[in-house]
Length: 210
Ligand SMILES: O=C(CO)[C@H](O)[C@H](O)COP(=O)(O)O
Image 1 (cartoon, rainbow, N blue to C red):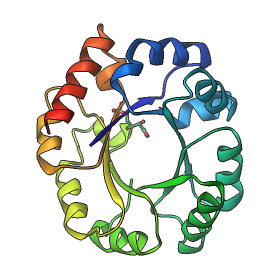
Image 2: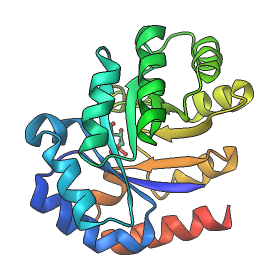
Image 3: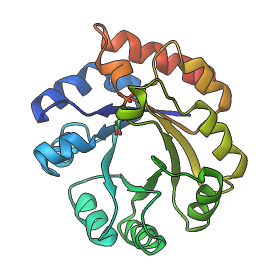
Image 4: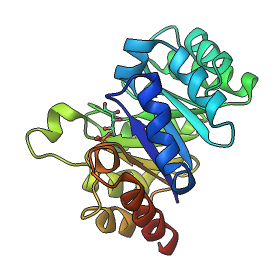
């Protein structure tokens, strides 16, 4: 199981400072969608340059022009690029094809997918690397989470790694770990804490203990 730090509400210098604090306790650093909107793929480039030993995920949430966007994120140094599970099959297949060409990975974000089990089976068959259940900020605000959804995809996904994102905190991490995803994505659960390093270290320890 790996730990990914999601950075959503920072600029490039703040992102670098934040990662410096916790880098020994995380496996992947996510350049979140709002950061890409504000800073462009320069943010991916800058973070990869500052932390060449960490994997960098570009959370582009691609919906169209997938091959081109995967190519651009790869050129900026992303190791993993996200596409939406609601995208057309042709887009997801295009993303996988380009990622393979570039030696990169594709994570499918299942946010807002209605038939989760059915779509997870379909995207799994397209050769994606990760399938991620995700409760975004707008549904977190009304008390939703993805813990049951994680069990749903664990039951049907045969090839891809499974991942979970959305509002995971230290106190809810044990519930997530019980379901054994391959990747746990945490944003505010680390970045919103006073002692980020201590929280990231504790999460890493809990994840290693499984
Ligand atoms: O992709 C995102 C929002 O769309 C976030 O990066 C993801 O939800 C993780 O952050 P948090 O733990 O703060 O919810």
